[in-house]
Length: 423
Image 1: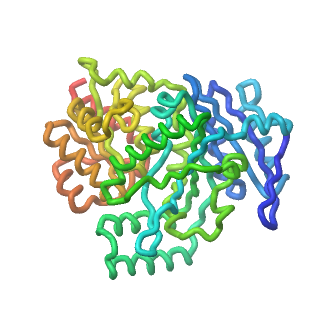
Image 2: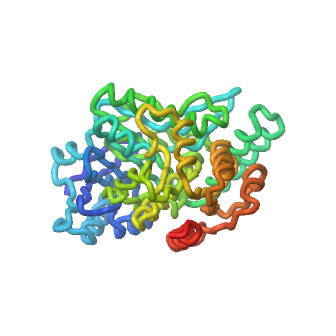
Image 3: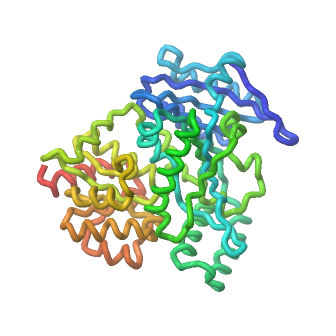
């Protein structure tokens, strides 16, 4: 088993690369997920090469201690042996082949905003863009780097001071201030910092991706007033090759930047167990095919993991979904695509969270579904009570609470949809 070594200031980090067999239908095998989430002293990254019907996945694991790194890797390989497709890079050439990034790269910079001398952050994720961008660009490499986040009292003190100043001075629209509060609350829970990157083989592919990502951003977070998506193009080889989170290279990042990148432990688990085998690929036939029920999924970008898991579950059981950005046609304006999906939908499932409670685009989707007399099911993925516009729009709807037992709630959602739609 080969470990690459990288010098980071006064520390040295070892990195191992493990391949995941194409027979594995999820991003990572379930036994790996359990072990990685428990290995709080080891960072890890998941790389997905999406250039065909069966995406290839590589796991990068890193630690400052070789003995811990080797023990973890051997334990992972013991649960999914080579016979099932799991192997570790055994030499530098194999390691380089697995981790070398494409020449054209994008990074989602959660600290990409400064306004009136203050840092701001927004909720936006690249993962939902993988499937449509892979089709439009001919293939891409996606990587998400994870590092454990532990709540610290100092974060809470600084966050409260920052938010109090925003409310007193009111330099931004109320929705932007409330969004910062929603993001800052993540600092108070355990979880994982996450960094998303994409790589493309050509500048043309990069340009297509940047344009599509910007359009998606404007159709969602743009309603808050943010000028553009926090996506940067450049050379991010250090992140790609080491699999380390960007805070290892910029440890003094602002707390709101860290907060925007945090995923809870449950969200991280759900993300790592998303399916990649393409069994939901036939879902696209739901557009324009008579007799096939279409379920419109309305969600905030921060809830992308639960939205995709919901989509995959329903489609495995014959309830086909319309979900952005997957069902947006190449070149189709984002607002027109949303209207098409809503007009064709027989039901709308809205994922209710602190972020979607504030989201103007989610509010507009609910309003349109109400206008179309579609079945509406609010599914709470966080223990929050809707307020303001969301409270008004959903006041007559029957709730489904999914924040305590998400997987079990999906089965209840399926049953409720079948009953309401007469299937």
